[in-house]
Length: 104
Image (cartoon, rainbow, N blue to C red):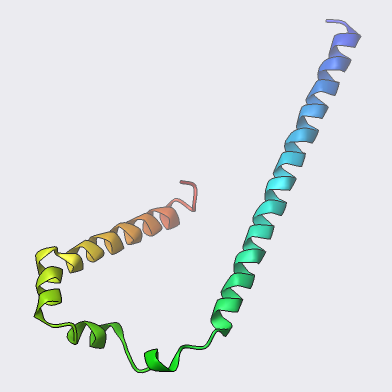
């Protein structure tokens, strides 16, 4: 190998490293922007007051007033067990991520 091929290989490696760094920088800027916009939207949603006609209700009181048909449907379609399974899956995934230090 001559000195010219070493120089051009070094220059090519530097250009590739520069554009890779630029790509990482632009990704970081975009993720920062997305985080900031989500924070702004969440702040705006928190500023909205709860309507007066919904302030005294909870999910339990609303479901208790629906009658036996909704209770039958919730029991027949096993909604409680399904939500429990989804919660267990999220807990497993979060535990796995914690144990592997967010490598997955």
